[in-house]
Image 1 (cartoon, one colour):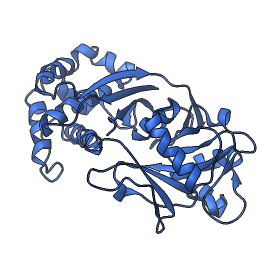
Image 2 (image 1 turned 90 degrees about the vertical axis):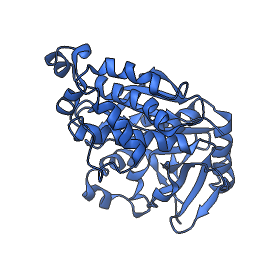
Image 3 (image 1 turned 30 degrees about the vertical axis):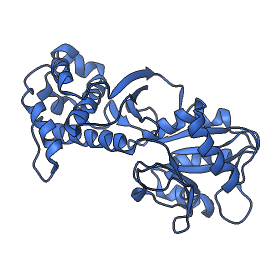
Image 4 (image 1 turned 60 degrees about the horizontal axis):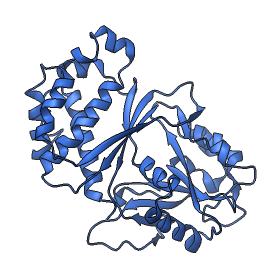
Length: 329
């Protein structure tokens, strides 16, 4: 699996230009994620036309996805001090996990059913690793249940077999904690605080801070979550996911502007018009033609290939993950 980091360099300016800037790497990611035999049958990457993408691309088949949680995980793993300070405050003052620096395990559950632990939870967790869920009673041993939690993403009957205090832990995006005390908390990551959901086993919720709103760490008693706003540019995150919807709807509409009900926002439809006008040209040429229309210097791309261990499922169907790395406010 390839991780392509799309790193924000400047604030979002014109909406359409920003959308084009983000649509370019998304379409490129979808193209490069096509299986080799599909590309060969189509005559090679340089010859694949934009209109062919709707026929060649199948969701889950050499898929390309977006993973904001990797951006948070990456910031913790690389000792980003601004992010570490916020996470450390949440762990030390609110979760009572003290001693040492924060650490993160990215817990991934694909829609295809292949469960992934990136940078191998089994190498980080010990037999004494405890999960603090915020419920009464002795904290459970995380390593003992990690495979069952992974399997529970697809199998409801396995969820029912988990201890009641962690039967919602399969919804976690990360496990955040500290290796010295060997204590961890189930963590959910959302770009929109309104999408937060509580579940047994989840304790921490990470969201981008929003302009004009308090960025204080707060307790959401209704969801039993400790909400930690991080100093990220929320508008960049919204543009990224908006661009993903544009590409998805465009492909589904046979590389044409989709019905208004599918893509009602004017800016989104304008980007689709730019694409439809070029549907008979090779994709790589189209992307180059769009670059002058994109917001300059909005983002840069870097690539890496992490060590991945599959805990459930025979193989990974997702070959490329795009992870937006927003700038810090």
